[in-house]
Amino acid sequence: MRSIFLLVLLSALLVSSTAIAQGVGAPTGQKTLAAAMNVYVFPDRGQNSSQQSMDEADCYNWAVGNIGTDPFELSKQANQQASQAAQQKQAVQQAGEGAGARGAVGGAAGGALIGAIAGDAGKGAAYGAAAGLIAGRRARRRAQGEVTQQIDQQTQQTQQATADQIENFKKAFSVCLEAKDYLVKY
Image (cartoon, rainbow, N blue to C red; front, top):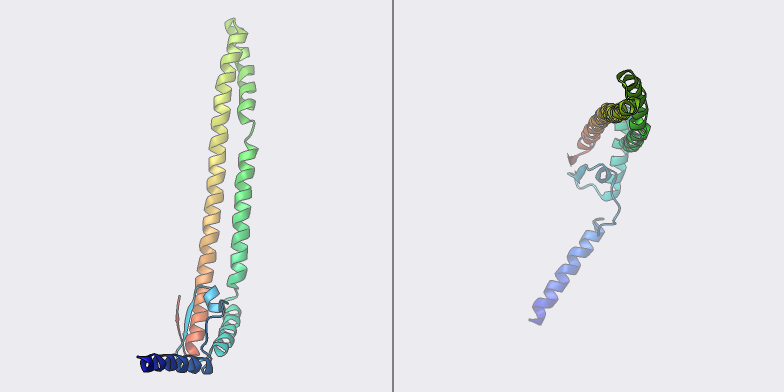
């Protein structure tokens, strides 16, 4: 029993020392360049991790040069555009404040004029104010909805264009790595 335990222990030590000698150690906790872009790379010809890092850096630079876009820069821009879209939506909501009150004032004036002709300006003003309030709020909501929809469409188009550019970059990056004898999936 003791000899089996020693044999297993020696086997484990031998395997771990062989892995360390070959440069295959425990994960360092740092993401590779490819992993940061959700690209999975496997060394097909036994390249060590330092060679893989150099090859990934070379292919990254090659892809940036050929495609003309940097995926990390694109991600930053996409985040900024999303933030700007949220600010624009908030501005649209705030810009419509008071539309109901303006409608009520205009409606009251019109109602008072019509009420004066009919014989009761006060009643006409009250009815006109209520109608103006409702109409003003409806107009505000409709305008806000249209502008918000336009902002959403522009944001969606920008996000799709960014996703397409990143996809293009990943293709170029992968082609380069495959030429350097790596298996690549994304």
